[in-house]
Image (cartoon, rainbow, N blue to C red; front, side, top):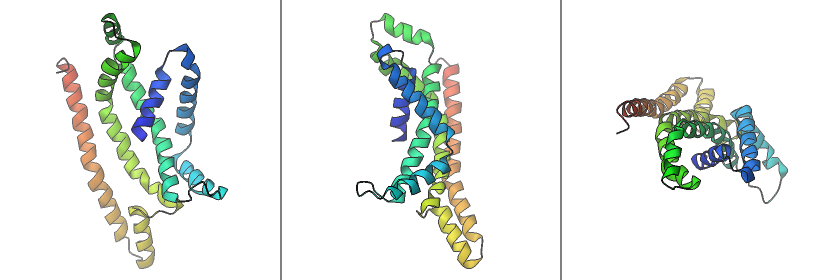
Length: 197
């Protein structure tokens, strides 16, 4: 959900079609607002605020609202990564696509986006490493995850070993993704240096 929403926001922010100007403004406002609000505050606002409306049509499950908060927050950040990738594609690529008769949509679909997505994979992995760690923020509204469970166990036994176990779990999940992101970044740099093979 984050990738789809972020890509739509990035595309909306990059549109130059005059009739889509309101969409561009809305996408810009969305990215600005959700990057300005701390993720923990968004988790609290949605996790406690929305269920407090006491509507039968609105689910009260904190897992749902914690997930929605993370999606809204991270989509804003990831949209900037996508936007940077799109803007990094040299204008000559667009001009070449237009010269062979591709429409603006076809140019984006077949020329710009494939190059942009390849370029942003390493930064995207870094964002998803951060997202993985930020799932612990959702525990403030009730759901129990690794950090919250460690806190509960430590408070019962006065032993900090559960925190160490939680830290090891995060390390086991995060370090391989970090190495993968670094490897992909190095590989992309080498490919660009060799003419994009």
